[in-house]
Image (cartoon, rainbow, N blue to C red):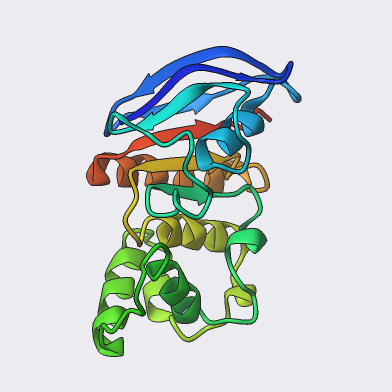
Length: 199
């Protein structure tokens, strides 16, 4: 569960209070400059609020650093080129994401990891599970964004933040990626906030 209590930030956000239960998928909309990304940056720890508190599962994380929040918050950004490395394979990208927030190096066998990654990618219904050794840079924008979504949810997390993840996608691909995101948040029973890009 994500809870925001009277969040203020400079003259951008004023007394924002919000509660998102596990399994809920909430859209955040508003004009450019309304503070949507600022709000996400406060939740993820990039910015510190002027006042107010951020709680996850009733634990106040307001003083936690960005690094400390890594195991609690999964982010997917608007541009999949920021979440994936073009010169690395799908497997290599997923392996890095899988280790996010872990204190020790992961010792799971490569064959088991490949099986896990294939299983996760199969829900996309894009055939990416059979392309683990292909470079991420060879994927279409929609495929790469869907990969980013799977990568974000590979490691442990409590809150999923989606920052205009369909902004650069066509209408059909946008609907598919958003439906996948909703299903993941529901199946994982995690709180999800999504900034909606209005075309």
